[in-house]
Length: 147
Image (cartoon, rainbow, N blue to C red; front, top):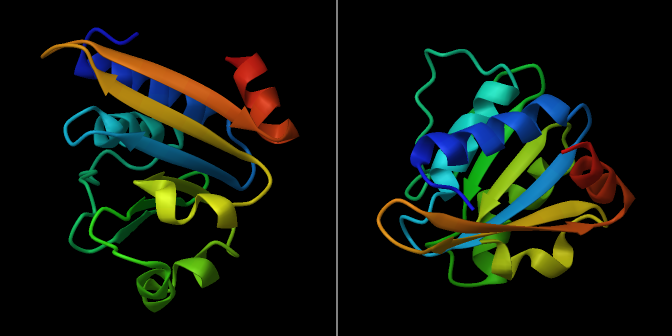
């Protein structure tokens, strides 16, 4: 449970500090549920410089940030089908080294690597969010244990 945007960002930061290898995080939840706030904290945990303003890539689809490990913030909200995913170059990008935070991952979920973490954000009220984390694979399970 998160009681504020700052708490959601702190969860992201905490996870970012634990990551040291290529990793995928699928982020689902309604608009305004905290997905981008989480990624802002994740960026801080990956030592992305403070002068980068982390925003949702809804219109550009993919934002890349340099940090201790490159962060790829991907938003598939506007993507209507798998054919459009190919046009973004996302599949080629997933071959690169980095942390991939993917908002609205449903179209891609069956194509993700064997190891990923799914995080679901549910709005309880204006300030609080229920955040559920599910590990898929050994690396993801190890991350959850470290938290």
